Image (tube, rainbow, N blue to C red; front, side, top):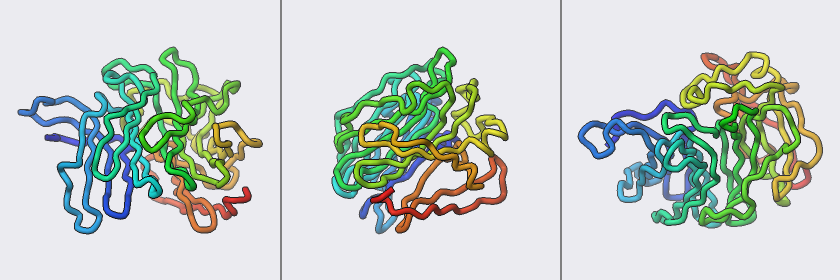
Length: 288
């Protein structure tokens, strides 16, 4: 039923032992009830054969769906899915998918939207809690009033209900925080990656729907930060300037990957860059 896929670089995939789940968005083709309208798209594939499991796919969680996130927890065999909607709903909405069944429960963190592609969530990520059945989520949100974006952290159960509702990570900061993504460190702690700027650098919220947000070069080169959070999202210690390592995060594709001896990410210099660097920070995640 889809005419085209929205070129939104928040498109995300999560993988279990038997399923590939792609969460993205697109525009409905002519002749369908949803013709020319945009919403989210969830496709499920058999991990062994690559066959699409059409009966397990589910579209239109949000309309319009301006940002998408997804994570998988092998302990609960559950996927957690998030959509940032600009109309139905005007919220960051979490839903669950497990054993081929979509939960009827949806949990919303109310934000804002104009119904035309502008809303407040700029970027975010979802990761599984390594010793439990739930998830943690981090995202940045800019108020409709034009104030700087703030980084939020939340934890959720496998059924997509909040354990800890979203809370600002830096409630007293005047800077802009964009991002981010996260990786578990053990003991309920999380390593969070985000980009920081002294001023509000995202003013055209429609532009974050596409590929190039117009991030200033000096922010790309010097704004990458790493912070350690506790189980409820409280800041532990002082954030680290990751740009000083010579490996900044690509703002639009912010991500962290767990590795056997640490955490890694891909570093690029910005839209159009022809060089990508693989970065690996060695650490004992249980003792950090």
